Image 1 (cartoon, rainbow, N blue to C red):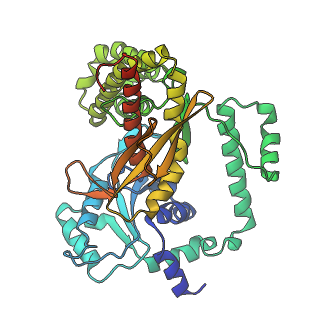
Image 2 (image 1 turned 90 degrees about the vertical axis):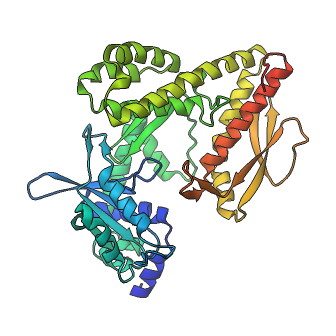
Amino acid sequence: MNTDEKLSKLSSLSEQSLREQLLVPLMSRMGFKSVMLNHGSLERGKDIVCFDINRLGEREYIAVVAKATDLDGNVSSPNSLQALVHQIEQCFDVEYCDLFGKKRITMDRVFVVTSRRITNGAQETVFGRLEKSNLSKMVNFVSGAQLAALLDEHFPAYWDATAEPIEVLREHRERLLQFARTLLASLGANLSSLDATLNEVMASPVPVRIAAPPDRTISHLSPNGVEIDKIAPEHAHNFCPRYSSRSIHDTFHHAKRYLMFSMTEVEEMIERYEKVVVIEDPAEFMKQFEVELEKRYDFSRLPFDWVSKAMKALGELEDGLRDVEPLRQRLHQIGKLEWAASVVDSLPALAQEIEAFLGEVDQDSFTLHWQIETKDERGKLGLLYGQDATAREDSFTTSHTRLIESFLGDETRLITSEDVMSDVLYRVREHFNRLLAAHGLLDEV
């Protein structure tokens, strides 16, 4: 593959492919430690985080801002660097929660990496904006051409998988097998049959079938570890409060996550905190939080950044339980609890189908039609796309826009399958309310 072909391949990458398939393995091969994807709603500018060891043996934390577009130095152009400067400043200004070091850290350097070109004046524009805060000397730019050279030196198998040395492939295989052994053992697998099972999986062409119970969730996944969380079975379904698009299941794990971030700053509370977060029942979790943390330490008034988010998530969980528990009881009263649970739990299986549909949408706004199918007293959601079936009792529609504005209305992003599913869960809850109202068990619909 010649240089032009390599640059063409890089320029065709999406940002997701650039982050996941190129930068993470490349930086790991270059010797950076704990290279982790951080892209998402809490990234605060940091698409990837990692660290390096300096000559004094100390960690230097690095954030990577990944772009799959030309970086244009013209501040008035659509691809101007104003947004990029803001993202770089966020990398330095907003602390990162190092879960494995149990501390909050700030970034020492920022790498801005694009799979395309950096046009004349782009770096000067950024450095000029950052000089006022003395950040310009801590930022490095990598263009598509430089990225191609780094791949040639450290990761030539990216261009041709057959170029990967056999010893590297063996190392990767053993690392994945060890990860699978540890994960399966932590989930309760029979230790005596682990290796035999893994060997059979590698040799068998038959796809592995995994039935995951709804009361067990991987709440944190990274190259450094996996945290498996459980929720009491009666709350493991995706029931959604009438005023929210987030289910009790998700709110429970958000509350635990923000609570965990808060507790990394208060080591003297760790012992009581650990008693609280291992609780599986959301209602008992709220009760013990009140006893062990709020009353004893006045937790909500602690002056730490994550405390306000933890308290907000805990408040949402408490309100959600107050709303969903009567719903479950009333559905049980009319013999529809298991049916309703199967309806809300069938939605995640449609995520890939929804994502594929969204990738083809070119209208600014669109409507989706949904139908609840019942078989053997279990319900299942089906996506009918443009087929209008609203005349049917168990059907409804959701309306969406391709671009979603931020809360302040100053930024937009593409709609995701999570956005669609949140709207669907809200409409399903309305359907349950109408069902209960028909049985005289609910005044409001």
